[in-house]
Image (cartoon, rainbow, N blue to C red; front, side):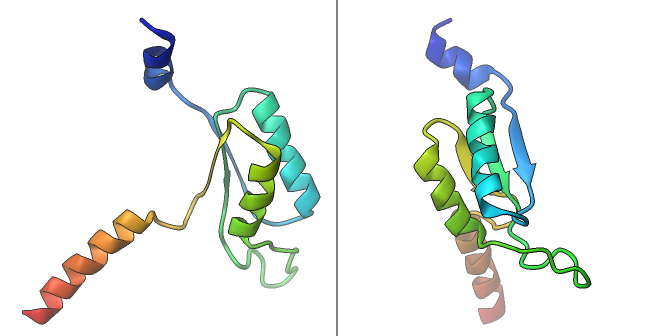
Length: 100
């Protein structure tokens, strides 16, 4: 098999972390994950984790931009926000049902 087909067929591994805490440490964690060979780095996109303690939360999309500036290979994303294609398809289905 070629190297390209091997990459497509192998199992991939990612890191999933909350978007809470020190932003610099989260960016550094993503860089470390990439250097260690992880395939993906994913942030949660909750706006609040604990109503009582309220840890510092970050906009996951802004934080992913900072991570993208420091990484080159690792796949980035969120764990909760749905894909725009999924959202578009779902809203079309709901719209067509509500019209009838």
